[in-house]
Image 1: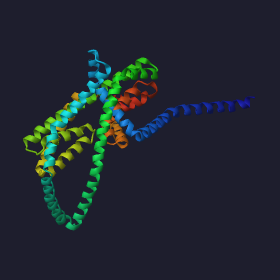
Image 2 (image 1 turned 30 degrees about the horizontal axis):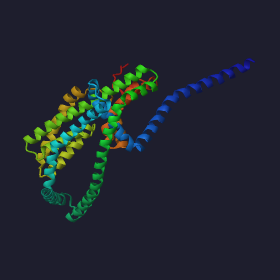
Image 3 (image 1 turned 90 degrees about the vertical axis):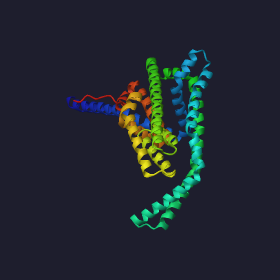
Length: 363
């Protein structure tokens, strides 16, 4: 009998070891499955989910106005519609600020075409002298590029119409979110075990998104003003149009400034601007970006999202690959909301800690 004791002990220890492995692997496997399933749903559900996500952002943004109107005994539907109309009014005012410059740009399309032809001929001469590429080959390549641009122009118009329809659809979703916000809140209270946790998640997510979006809009307004004044003082054509477009792209994290600056340079070059004008534009934008990064961003937006740079960049890249430009705009507020959810759920709390910007004590 004594001889069998070690065998029984080894079998028991092996079983315990196997159970520990299963338990230790359960959490990372469930997280991986969650990420894979989420990616598939986000990719194939883009047409449905993008307007819903923007609608949720809009509803968070105007929620204070909606709450104030409800205090004045407004009907919840009338209050929601009135709150969303503030976004429509803002967009109309925004468009009116540079709509007349777009009209001027369109009226001078023939002059712009002549300018581009002259610059193309100069550029072809320089390329021929520097690199030995014949002008004929350059013209063939230029024709291919122009044909490609013309093909994409039609698809760009279709994308623009799609973006407009998604915008209005998002406004409808925002109205519905506002009118049903109490029922949505009670739903989360039923889903999340602790009622206090559910209330904290909803309030924290609402505050984070409101502060982030309102702060970014304020910064865009300030940058557009600074750009406009700077461009007008140095005599850049279509200064207000270029300034507003360049400021708008700062909504896209990390690469928005590069895109905005490139677009400003292209418009300036196409409308007869010189290399000096382009360098002045880059100089003004660079100085404004330093002010934004070191003064405006910390002061107005601050660390509301509480995300570390690694997950911020990964989130922007991931959502951009799934949803395109819309994903880049929505990435940070959505990931910020996801972190709040993880922080308040015990099972996923380590992931929330990993995503956060909390300082770690060094041993």
